[in-house]
Amino acid sequence: ESSREFSGSAAWRDSHVLFRGLLATQASELFDAFWKGDREYLPPTAGPQSSLLIPNQTRACRHRLRCLYRDIVTGAAESIELTTPYFVPDSRTQHTLMSAARRGVDVRVLVPRKIDVRLVGWAAHAAYANLLDAGVRIYEYLPRMLHAKTMVVDGNWATLGTANVDYRSFFLNYEVNLITRDPTLCRSLHDQFATDLGEAEQIVTSQWPKRGWREHVSEAIGWWARRWL
Image (cartoon, rainbow, N blue to C red; front, side):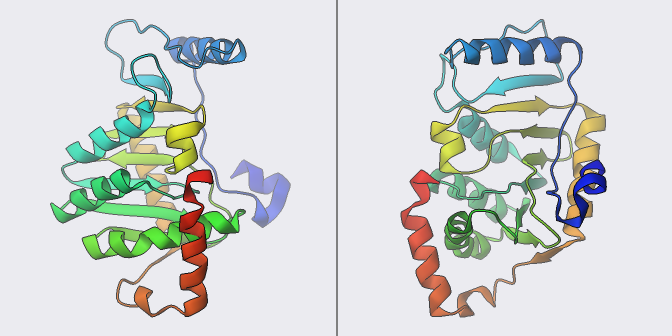
């Protein structure tokens, strides 16, 4: 909320986290490695940790965050609360979310209605229909641009970081996410998700197919360009 004090009501709604101790050391090491051109560096860990920093590209896996999202969503038993500003999921990620909803998991996706890249919005809309039909609930945040990138699963696992649920983050960009089971942080992110839903509008499954031909054309253009977004 502090950003609104300086930028007014148009300030973007984002989420950030402060690192201390080992996490701060890991963040510094990842930054130094990236600065030197080593995008596959993975900092060592000291025993079991409730929180870890995970980059997208490592020597073991070039698309580690995508694989991590898939594994965690596949293992979800009760709920998935996903917030992302740029929602252009690849086919496998879509199917993973859809499968979770079909087996009874409460899957809710929160995206912005006001978006700074219109083409991304078109591509996101192109993915809505299949997700809605599978039982995924989609909400659009109304007040301003939503830029938070978080996910809370079953209330006891969460991620927050730079990665969007889109092609660029999963397949091209260098991204770093915090993966945590810290109960205080998980609860905080869950509470923030609930607050944001209070300022969002749910996409109604029965009404979505009735949108006009212009919207269908725009979505087709966005989906065609999805791998570059």
